[in-house]
Image (tube, rainbow, N blue to C red; front, side, top):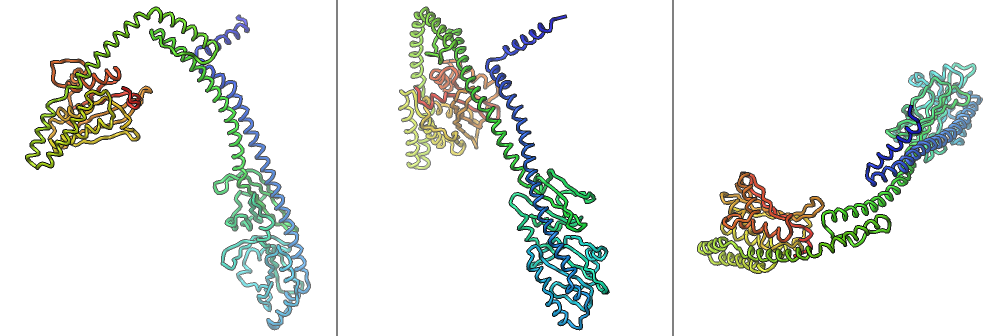
Length: 613
């Protein structure tokens, strides 16, 4: 049986070996993840949950406190109104009026006016909205607080209930204001006993809603109140008046209470519901207090905590990223220089930043390269001389290539000018001669130069196409597309590159096109593999080429054959590009039968923008 310690050591060694199989950059990232990210996420998640719990309890406690405040206010109001109802019920003057027989209305009104208690209560107590005494005494009529009962009122639920029980009860009652808007109020209903009288009377005292609003409303919470199973008689949001409570209530419980959360109008809210047994009454008032902004505050606090946790991870991550990129950049630079030396490239950078072991290793590499340079100095000098001779030879070839101007172009142009002069008159002939003069001047001025601007080169093509328009009329259209933001006056290219390509497109590409021919020049930049290139496409919508013909053309512009007369222009342009910019920059030809031909010139954008010769 193997020793457990040996097994553990083997596992640790395997873990270390697996750790060493990845790059240093990944090792640093893994260390950062294990040491920083994981602990912060665990601790941060715990703190967020704990904070959420604490904040919920805090807002819940505040909500309960406000609910208790409203309960106390409502209890005091119900107790006060109960006392008023008791005084009115047992007032001898009120009973005398309710049980009396009056011969006429004037006698009845004088009796009511002599009793000032009802008016005094209605005007003295701000919590009282209205005091009404409903009676079926036929000698009484509607006057001040007294209301004559009709058959419709006798059939109402509150009146039937008042006749069935001796005690008081509370009820939500609707009423209309002066604008005929429906409102609701809390009302206390009580039967007034009339001894030795055949008549009945019911006292209704309504609570002033504005009084409740002054004492109950605050800016933080909303209150919704109802009585028994009835509709809401008071709500901070008046649109809820007359509707059911926003949260389901178990009315069968003697004292219903709920604290938690609910959705109100699509918003998550804290809610606290409590029950108030009205003073000296069997009615139960349900008080619902809502906090519509608590969850938003909690989310804001949690969001801030989350931002702090994220910053606690991001800042170390940025530092690790900066250090890793700096360290790995130096390592990659050392490897790059070593790779250059392995490929016999001894042009090293002057120095490597830092003074640690990596810098010492680079110093040793420089010493080794110095020794190699001394051994190959003579061979290198010979190579330079050979290269100088090659460059001179290339310059001579360029001069020879630049001098190969197509004589057919000049002959055809002059012939066209002559025919136009005979047909339409001297003015058009003068224009044609002017265009030819401009074109020849540009050619002659650039014979001895090695660079021109792209704007001048395209202008030369424009003049050339105007001349061709004299020959072919509307048979050939011409368009240019230049990438937005590209400054043609700051882009430098070899002279006399585009006109031969355009001429080749007209002579060969559009040779069989009788109408609607088109030449399109597109100038744009691309960044393949991180190298910015200037691309110039010359497209025609001619008959195109079969794959075999296209392959032969591509071969002709790469391999020199002095015996042929075709494609010499494209060959010259291709050779000039390679000689001036290097092997990677050349002419590309794309074509399909019936779809036209595209000739693309590839130029290094950096040299073009810097105007390097």
